Amino acid sequence: MDMDIRIPIGLLFAILGFILLAFGLYSANDTELYARCLGRNINLWTGVTMLVFGAFMLFFSLRKKKTL
Amino acid sequence: MVETFSLSIIDYAIMAIYFIFVLGIGWALKKYMKSSTQFLEGGRSMPSWITGLAFISANLGALEVFGMGASGAKYGLMTAHFYLIGAIPAMIFLALFMMPFYYGSKARSVPEYLKLRFDEKTRGFNAFSFAIMTVFASGISMFALARLMEVMLHWNFHYSIIASAIIVLVYTYLGGLKSAIYNEVLQFFLIVIGFLPLVIIGLQDVGGWQGLTHQLDIVAVNKGFEAGTWTSTWKYLGSSSTNPMGVDWIAMFMGLGFVLAFGYWCTNFLVVQRAMAAKSMSAARRTPLIGALPKMFLPILVIVPGMIAMALMSMPEKGLQLIGNNGQTDYNMIIPTMLVHYYPTGLLGLGITALMASFMSGMAGNVTAFNTVFTYDIYQSYIRPGKSDAHYLKVGQFATIFGVAVSIGAAYVAANFNNIMDLLQLIFAFVNAPLFATFLLGMFWKRTTGNAAFWGLITGTFAAALHYSVTIAEGKGGWLAHLVEYPSAMAQGFWTAIYAFTVCLILTVILSFSTKQLKSDADLTGLVYSLTPKTKDEPGIPWYDKPVVLAVIVGAISIILTIIIW
Image 1: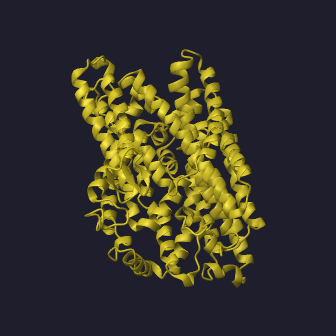
Image 2: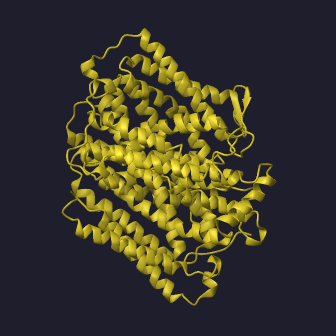
């Protein structure tokens, strides 16, 4: 097998998730920014989701390396 | 006034990181592209979860996303038919009954199967029409992306065309089909995460599902339909006059559910190619079934935003204005408009990246299907047969460049249609609808002859064009006469498909009885149902990997979903 696609997917989601999470924390008090999305910090929540998904992909890639 | 916004550094960073990964995947696969099989067929080595996600992702191009968003607004939840009756039965049929012939025979493409089963001219017709269709589809994707970037971000139209062409070219040229498939999987996840927040926030904004239903009831009544028309699927299909789509249940069931769906999912090499790249027969058969699982839930991502937008547009206090509407409503702009309306800096970058990803997957899917058909079915058959594999690998790479170059031309041609989905339906109806009759007869009736298949196919395609020429809907068609007027272009498309299929089926049967079968039973082994040993699963695969078990699960879930949203 050439390349485990879970690694690039996991990495991309982890990196983008981290960026959104960090930006979400940084801008947490910026009510003007989040006025358009009903005051919810959706950067933060999307970031967390992506980070978890990315970690999940990487975890499975490492654990099941032999089977693929 | 259209909402003003601008991208910040963080949005651009997200885009840039994504494109680095896209190109990186192509780059990393470059060293494996040593044979035409690796480059054009992905080496037939991939597990089914990858090919399964690519199977639906290749179809989840931006045209699909925009068209479905537009239809979600215009027709409501009824659009979900494209994801249930218009996809699932066909995907199950492909997995259980047709994949053994595609994967089990020596065919490397759908046209090549036609060559083995029928004759050279049937393959030639299919190969050429398919090749034209793929470049055209890729061109439309490119055009739509560039126009969107122009309207939304004020990017230069020509630069966008060139930039998207180069990115797709680089990763498909470097890594071939495998690179396209891997990127489709990546794009699939990105599209899901990029659009999901939109649905959640949008639903909250209209007051949840109940608020949405309430608001769409008002919209429906204002348009002269019963309340509830926008939030049901089969309920108002009794007659074509009681629903905004203008189709009745016969047209829906036969036109979309049978002819168009089976024609698309079972014979379109663009999607079948993904399954053929799987590592084993059972993996190939699982591919459409694994794809079907997320497919059934995609309406939440692509149709519900359209419905939300429709509701919001009827609530002036919400201030939703479609991007780029010069006095008229361009429903295709719904998804991008909603992204801009709701997404703050950061998530906006992700949303736009997801949009770009879906454009790219639409383009790359077509380009990789084109280069395979061009190399094996056109070049190797008609231009230079009998060369070394290294030669065909070179040709495949050249065809990739050629395909992208022609798509750029097609991008500049494509412009005049309001609802892109209608145009695609039209093309599918002309080329794909009769095709399924040919495959059905070819795979399950050994008497079907090559001459019958060819002339049946030609006449079926001609019948489609003729039907379109003598009927009119929304001002389209009717070049020759106005015998029938359909309430919508969609109804016209469904009926065009039904006529084309019927003409092809009947004519092929008649001609098969009156022409000689030139193929012996031995020639047809592995290509026709009655002459092929029953496909057995590889020994020792767990129950959940068995195609039949998966098919039952997929079928059951789709029936439950259909009842829930009846």
